[in-house]
Length: 305
Image (cartoon, rainbow, N blue to C red):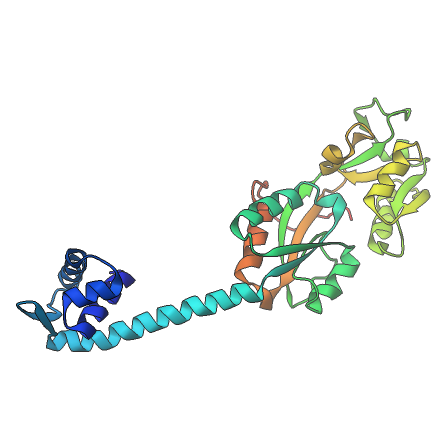
């Protein structure tokens, strides 16, 4: 049984004439007659008493008419509510961490744009410290970022990808042709790092990582964006610890070397408010996860950042 069956039935019941009902609905008379017969065959009882060209409701048909009108009304209201929901979500504000989303973000935007062409996506380059309060204040709809050290109760989190941590050096660096390097080899050199003010947990993690070999990180320069960090390393200002996903972004400007022993991977997650799971937001998260490698279901990783 489909909604059109109910619409045809209600029209015939109101007009008490199949020809007039067909004109009202802009369909052929044989077509509407066939649909009414199909409906009666499906429910197992006659809805009309037929006499010549006139029809009148059977006793069962009178009861069915009330319910059919109610179903059609509810269906119409559902469409209106859904449209109102889409209209209210004409924009999604997405915060993102550039260095970890160079692969995730383009695929998410392409896929989401095909499904929701009317929803505008506003992108905001932010640190995780900036994203969390904006999410909680409802000034941000979703964050593609590093896992927070403490997940606020009102937020939901889903892991999207994990990336191997690499050492990035300029093409003229003495180790640029190496396949593997160790922290011991890199420790004496200056590190191009993110600003301590905006990325305090990043600096704490650096100290913890180098602490495993009894050293302290030698911060040579601080940068407020991945762009300036790449530029600094490319001209020979030390090295940087970066995720493997940056390989496509840096091209020939940097050499990404594998660390042995390897560091814990960098995890990228989606964060959003539990009370804001709209259809478009759910679709954006699904788009961000498309073609990703399913993360293992073991305990959460000891992520680098």
